[in-house]
Length: 321
Image (cartoon, rainbow, N blue to C red; front, side, top):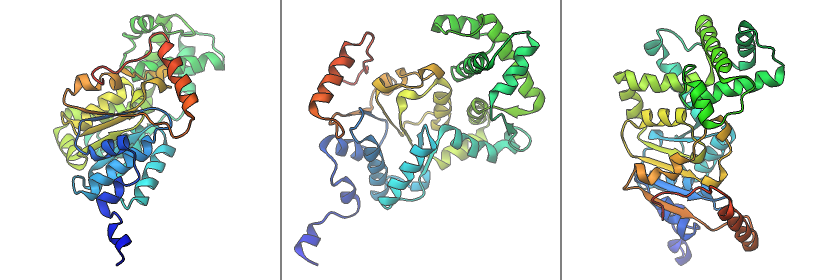
């Protein structure tokens, strides 16, 4: 072996090689709770995959006990691919819905008394039937808006009775009066119950319920998954947070990654306050900021930061100074 080969980093050391100082600090923080604040172009995906790989190579993680959650199947696939390139296999990288479906399909006989019900792939047909029952004249655009309101209500954990007050408080611009939307929402839920079907929000809600109310299910799932990573945490909604809390079961082995300036799902209930208030919820959290932009020139970064700072109501991370 040559001197150069002897000096070449191997194993866990190699995983951290090539990361900048901030990325390295985040990747080496393998015990939760950890909050990584990462703007666009700062290498957040590289950082979290190296963090998982470092945890595996140092023996802190067993790959099969890590659940990495993101918002798209494509992003989950990218996580798996990058981990594979780092010599790590077996980590579960899935969307919230894919993870919930996998778990609920397995536990449905225990929780629901039978196989996983059929899923409503498209709400519009069921929403149209509910709107007709309430004699609402609708076109395709208003049906989409009604379906969007029902989805917003369910992701924010609002029942049909809750909807009017919650919608007014949130300044929702619904296609009909809040009371009419609530009536359609109630009929929509009744139609699913009659047909024995679930929608995609139900997948998360029923999985959370299974963990909250069935000790044997919670024990099995929490025994399987001991370390959690949530990407794009600024886009988590109350329903997803409820499921995440159910997975954790009071544990703090959680790493979240996000940028409060990039919330893109607020119209469906996403709440960046979960990211901004992470250090309030976990006072002993390690907070790492990734600030070096590898995509843009310094001039572009400076202008963007100036514009963000000038924006009214610009979000600020509490306890992250």
